[in-house]
Length: 194
Image (cartoon, one colour):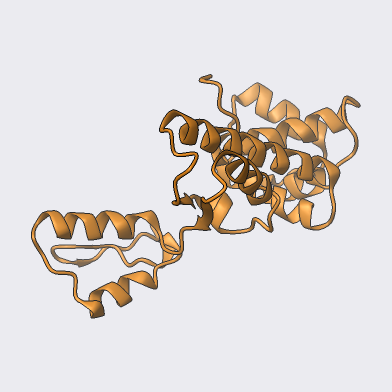
């Protein structure tokens, strides 16, 4: 809508669209077909198509993860989608670099988000690095090693004037997967399994 492409909330739709387009003959066959049918519990693409159409169903965001599985097997459709995501993110990074006049600066471009921090084997990152290198040769592309919420907690503690001890820092650094962070409230642990 705003000129962007991709992200988990759009790549899941690309998976679905690619399966439908392969089924109706507009695109080449893709490994995404079997993967998506299995994920969603359908035997045939036609059944899936009609069920989604007739019942206004939405493709789950986690369907985007299927791209990595298919790409690892050399699926051309999945590889093209992931490459397009990387090219688009690279264009976005380069645009920000140019707008801020940072072409000659030394800085990190930090990749965050589950698609970039889990599963990508360079299919997305490669085009980003190429675009960043062309826009700012001294910049480095790095991947966020902890969940973004950890940084938010660190910032909140800093704003409250709390000192972040090395023990707390090291403890929080271990959270590389949001699901591994135990949620608590004033009375104890919140069970997120319900």
